[in-house]
Length: 260
Image 1 (spheres, helix red, strand yellow):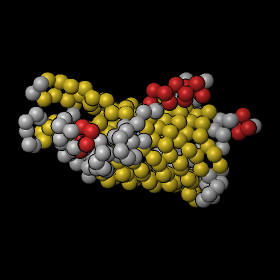
Image 2 (cartoon, one colour):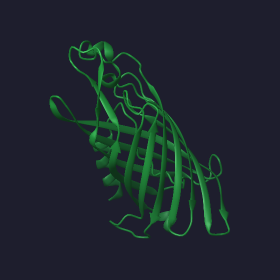
Image 3 (spheres, helix red, strand yellow):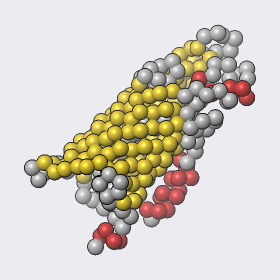
Image 4 (spheres, one colour):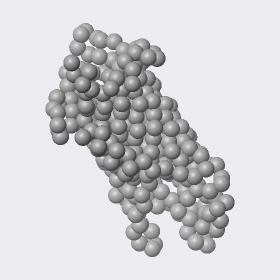
């Protein structure tokens, strides 16, 4: 059942885009080899978008309203120690952002698909007073671009686990793919030429959240995670910042070998 859900969601979300992922849920806890984890997330994002009006030499900024973000992520454990002593896992993440904004012509809705592939390495961790576990990780990934180039990112995350809570923080440096629609103001005049221009942006994304363990199985998530993310300094054009508030639901599936 877990594999069927992954295949279906992959077809729905595995689409190239020109944006960046906004949801993290990175608790830095590496998944055991053979184990799988499925995550879904949703929530609002506050940001600005912009377009160029016809016969105008300037860019008119539009404030996004009803900007919703949906996420599906899948992780698979690969090794319990290699290469830095605390294991590694790989993951896929797909997001779709829905913009609803208005201008003189009325309301419009735009969708922005994003697809990420990444690998995460567990760094040395330790127990504190036999109750609290400190975990940290390095994550490197690829954002699949829709036009002339791709996006890349590197992320450091850490967390403290105690009782049924895992507070965490993750900081990601991103190089986003070129989006000719957003970054080339003359796209309506020469769309072919606009698609050939590199215009990548550098961004930082900081995510803060707490994962709550439910110790449940089946259709009830094993982790429920509220999260807030900040993106700057080039979140949009010409906007500088974005803030996302999300809720993540995570299901874990242990391999038969790890259940023994």
